[in-house]
Image (cartoon, rainbow, N blue to C red):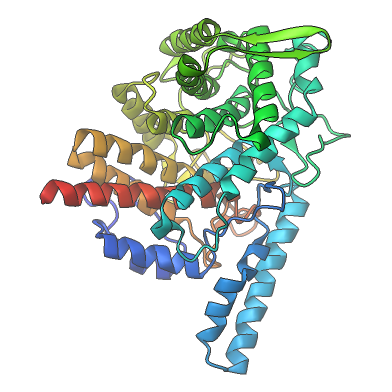
Length: 489
């Protein structure tokens, strides 16, 4: 069993589900890892729901728990015991209702580009590894539908790009530009509210998964379902980033809360450009003709954008931002983990190992607590409201960050064979498990309850982003354990 804080100095995580705690270990075997994976699968913890055309909601509507295979398997365990079956179905009904109400109440039934791509990434990894996806009742190609849905949304609303590129909308207006939050079924932009859409990292995530998959042979540029929306998106994003000067653009970043030059956005942009550059070295230039104008993408233009982002990152990191709309600076921010994980997946050198470890150490020192990791110091958001009653250092603790750090450290272990990285990876993997609550859901975050002053899950559960990262962290742990086995042979 996992013995927290065994000489590491890291804050000991609080497990919110006693059964998961019993299944966790300080050092895993692949058999032990499979035991905890199977328990989460049986309870629907990592069940991700996609709509018919590939759309996803930020909060998972747990209708996915009713997949025929898993439901039949669960009911078979009761061997005709009507009372047990009724109790099981009642609990299932309550969980499904809670997830639907949570999504609708917090408008998290909508889709965010960033969340969708991370869900698509986890689904891709599950498809590549049948052992990881066993029991999840996934349909082949689901990850492609998620990516295609995002690209088609932007193809459907390409005028959002064009208005900024042509100068009709100011690139400084945080409510303008490509909509990164939208209806996951109709793909319609959200009308009537001025969302903070100016988030370069969200746009970069879309391009990253597209070229990450193509460069590894999991997707073809000539796939007719993707060809037109992918081509248009690539050309318009290139023109958009040159228009807004992405390397010095003060936008809203991953949390949609601060107008600044965010390093977290620049890392994602840089890694997406890195993947695009590898593609263009063999594919060559591309052009999109629209409205009597031509939007070109050349290898040199992509290379220059990448180099400008990399140069600016060298000035900012390990900080999140040193330039903002009111002169504020932020030295540590969990959003940096987003780009660091993509960089490790891609093998992109834009952030070296020493800087990656420094950023993780800063997050652990300033943001990590027993219940998760805060987004940044003095964050007032509790998932629904700004709170002014959070004690210092007790900001909402988010659940997706440790699983992502675990994935990063796993790549570093397998590349360097340094056992300290495996220990560190395992610690953050277990922190991801610790977030699973008594309902077997992964919430967005744990917050201080206004009345009881106790730590409780926020209303946004299960958060699909967090679920996807827990699933991805299993893939990372299994890869590291396989690697360890090879080293000891």
